[in-house]
Amino acid sequence: MKILGLIAVILTGGLLLSAVHDFPDWGDTTSPASSYRLSQYYITETIHVTAVPNMVTAVLADFRGYDTMFETVVIFTAGIAIIGVLRRYGPGPKLAAPKETITKEKPDLIITTTCRLLIPIIQIFALYVIAHGHHSPGGGFQGGVIFGASFILLALAKDLQTAQKWVPEKRVLKLAVIGIFIYAGFGLVAMLFGSNFLDYSVLHPIMPATDSIMARSHSMLGVEIGVAFTVTAIMFSIYSNLASHGDLKEGL
Amino acid sequence: MIWAFDLILLVFLVITAIISLRTKDLLSASMIFGVYSFLMCLLWAEMEAVDVAFTEAAVGAGVSAVFLIATVLRTSRRSSD
Image 1 (spheres, each protein chain N blue to C red):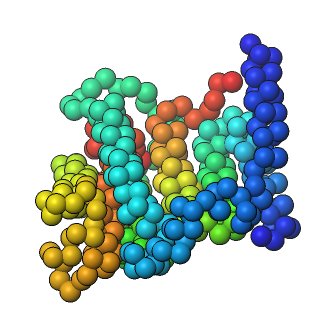
Image 2: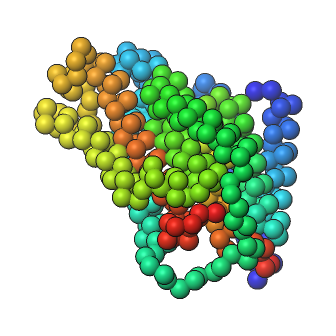
C-alpha cells in the first residue's frame, strides 16, 4: 500500500513539475492573464470608477462582490458546522482526556501584564486594517482574523471565562449573522434603488456628500466591516470550542 | 525578486514542509507548520502580492497554528505512525 502511494505521489508530482514549464514568468506582461483586456480594465480604470487605490480590494469587494459575499457565508457555515460537531451541553461523556495534565496555576504576572498592554494595540491595528483595507493591503478577512486573535490571546493569557465576558457565545453567533446581513443588506438596498444586486454606485442618495463613484468606495468599506464581524466571531468561536472540548467552561 | 533571498526561502520552505510531515511529536509538527506558513507569507510578500501575504500571516501563521495546537493539546500528543 505504501508503494502504491509512493507511485501515485511521484506520478502526480512529475505531472505538476512538467506543467511548471507552461507557466508564464513572474511579472511577464505578455502572459494571457496580464494581456487580457479585463486585467487592463482593472488596472487602468479601478481608480476612476471606484476611487479605490487598492485594486485587489476593489476586485474583491466590488467587481466580484458576489464571490466575496459567499466566501463570508462559507466561513459562517464552517463555524456553525464546528459548533455543531464540538459543542456539548451539560456533563457529557469525557471524550479524550488530555494525556498530559495541564497545571492550573494563577496566570503569570508578566504574561497578563504584557497581554493587557498588547491586546488594545492589536485591536486598534485590526480596526485600522479593516478601515484602511481599500487604500492599503488589508481588509475584512485579515482585520477580522487579527481582531479574533486578540480575543484568543486574552483567552490564552488569562482563561476562557475572561474572554467569554467580552464575547459570550450568544453574542458571537449574533455578530456572525449580523456580518452577513450587513453584506447582503448593501446588495438588497442596491436592489431597492432599482439596480442589480451589490451594484453600489446607486447608493449615493443615502450616503451624505457622495457621488456615484465615492458611493462604491464607501460601500466597499461597509461590506468589509460586515466581513470582519463574521470572521472575528467565527474565529473566536472555533478557538473556544476547540480549546474547551465544546463545553466553553475551561480553556487550555 | 532577489534570487538569493528567493533561494533561501524556497529551501527552508521545503525543509520545514518535510520536517512537519516527518515529526512524531504533533505539537512541534504544528509549530513547524506555522513556520512554514510564515515562510510562505514572506514569499508572497517578496512576489509583491502583499494582500495575500497579509492573509497568509494572519490566517496561516497566526490563527490556524493556534487552532492546531489547541487540537493537539486536547487529543493525544504523539502520532502513532
